[in-house]
Length: 238
Ligand code: ADP
Ligand code: ADP
Image 1 (spheres, protein in one colour):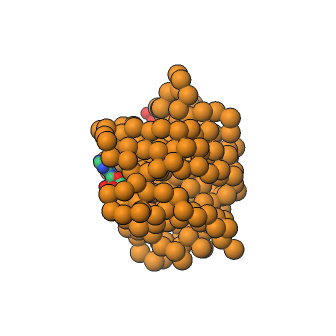
Image 2 (cartoon, helix red, strand yellow):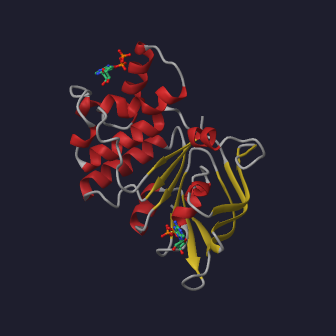
C-alpha cells in the first residue's frame, strides 16, 4: 500500500557543508512527484534522506522530520534497514548484481527479509518481473546473469528487484539518464503503471520527462554555488 510522505524542516549536511536547506512538503500516495533543478542543488541528497541512505555517506547528517503516513522515519529506535525496505530506490546507472541470475536479482531482497517457500518465491519473482514489464523478455532465461541484459532491461530488472519487497514508496534517481530514448519511453510508461501502487518520487534533469511522468514538479535552486539547495516552487503538472 502506498503511503503519504510528509517532510518538514528537512536539512542535510555533509560534514559542515549544508547541501539542502529547510525543505517542507507533502507527497500524496499514488502520485508521481518529479524534482528538477541545477546540478549540485541537492536533488540526490534529498532523495537519499527519504530512505535514510544519506546517513551512510561519511559526514552525512539530517535535521528535520520525514513521516511515512504517521511513522517518523528518523524517530528514536527506528531501524534504517527497515526504512529501506519500506522505501525502495532505483539509481541512475542500472546496478543489477552482475554475477547473479535474473531470478536471484529479483529474489535478493526477499531472501534477506524472510523465509519464503520455493513456490512463493517463484510467484513473487514472476509477479515482480511482470510488474516491471520485463517478464516476457526474460522468462526463458531466468538463470542467466542480469548483466547480459540491455541497459533498459537492466533498469527494469532493478525496478523488479525494488518492487519485489512491496515497498510503500519508490525513489528514482535519474532512472533514464543512462538509457537510450526507446528504453526511456518504456521506463516512463512503466512509471505511469507503478503509480497505481506506490508513491513515486523521481529526480530528473529533463523538463519534458517531468511533464510527461509526474503529477507535480518541484523545483530546487541554489542561491549560489556552494550554498544549500532550496525548494523554490511546486507546480501541478497538467
Ligand atoms: P544534485 O543531485 O542536485 O546534483 P547532490 O545532492 O548530488 O546534488 O549534491 C548536493 C551538494 O552536496 C553539492 O554541493 C555536492 O557537491 C555535495 N555533495 C554531494 N555528495 C557529497 C559527498 N559525498 N560529500 C560531500 N559533499 C557532497
Ligand atoms: P534452492 O532452494 O534449491 O537453492 P532456489 O529457489 O534458490 O533453490 O533456486 C535455485 C536456482 O534456480 C536459483 O539460483 C535460480 O536462479 C533458479 N530458479 C529458481 N526458481 C526458478 C524459476 N521459477 N525459474 C527459473 N529459475 C529458477
